[in-house]
Image 1: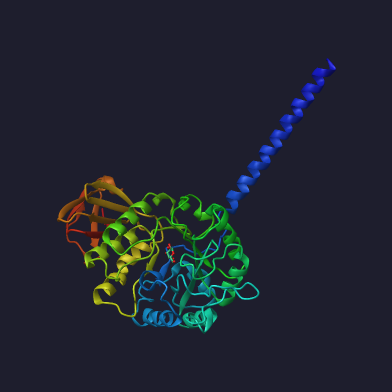
Image 2: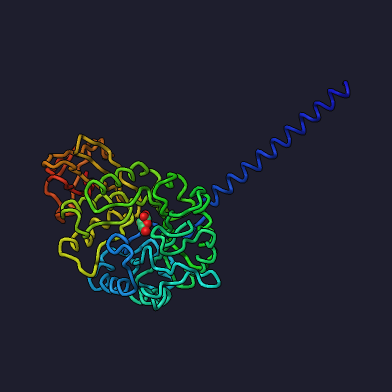
Length: 421
Ligand code: GLA
């Protein structure tokens, strides 16, 4: 054989070997990445988080008095017990402290504009004079969990306090040392790099901080966080901020619905916090708001003043049957399975072969709305018992093939359907 041919064959062989080995290295990297799965892997968020956050009602006017009084109110009203059990962290918490598990936290504006000489975040002296550690101790003594807010940028959105960009490890350690259980991480005043670059830095920092901290990503759906959020956090905002009105509420839950397949235990789509009780919507509209959030496996984070609840608001947010749909162990987000103009059918599976159903009337006139078994994923000949979870009544009719209900304007009916034959 000609020497040149031998050299060429050897070169070809060596190229093939090196290509093969680099391919297998990539494959190995990919599969170990898959095995690693969630960078965070904190075991939290097995069901959507529940609790209360200051922003929707108080904006920047939040202080330690409001947080403490809210913690007291959550306990005295019974809300903390009434299914508002932050079961997702129950697993690890049970081992250490048998307690109620409900979250409360200040949103933006809780810190001074400047860090201390060592670069640490400083609680704002005029509003949180006792510091966050003391607040955490108080909240924990009530059997609740404490969340905190920061930002993957230079400042938070209010621009009244620093963000954590470039200080991730230091801030995560500070939060852990204060006894923080939950971090909401916003996206304002960032440096223009992608959220997929900035958010995982905090994920790693939290995993090293020495305390399980639920990580709630708040990048407003900018880079479709549903596609990558599961590896980085326990929930991800899918939309811009909610406003306390019917159209905003619906537009947000519509956007969130698109990502239904990507929610699962450990990682949830977050269409923003609840406005129930803040006064901008009618009672029936708030019932629809709460129902849609519950069936969508959205975080149930109250955003009203729980120290001053009306009976109507309390009845909505304390509905255990609706909360049970949200906290169902299957953790499958419902979908809008059919639309007919302003009439919509939302449905999703629940444990025990049951199905959650919301018949939503977006119109300003009443409508009769029908959920057909083939649309909502029930075998054609199944006989169904229907529980109206707002009326707290099991209907006498046994339903075959479909269920029809009259739905008032801007209202919904919500059922749990159970096959009995
Ligand atoms: C952003 C977030 C809100 C709230 C505010 C605080 O707009 O999306 O939920 O945290 O910042 O400034």
